[in-house]
Image (cartoon, rainbow, N blue to C red; front, side):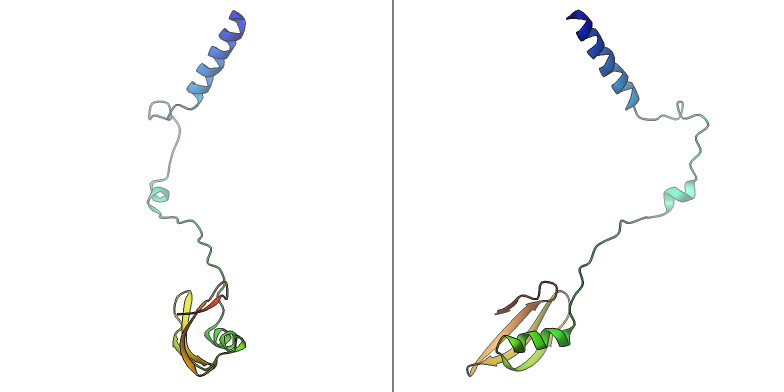
Length: 103
């Protein structure tokens, strides 16, 4: 039992020593180019593909709307004016998921 506790304590001590931060005294011979530190490297951002405004207008028409007119095709939500059964609607479409809804 005492042997297991001693081995566990030694393993914890070795682990803690291994994760200590590097100081200038312990980093002898380590050279870091200062130009590398100044560069701003940003991770890649995944932007999902969007449909075109023309394709969105066609999709609105397939949902039964007529006289579809574009209001805005910027960003990820496109908006249109349209008529269905004689009533006027403002239509929004998500440019990524292609979901169509009336506003």
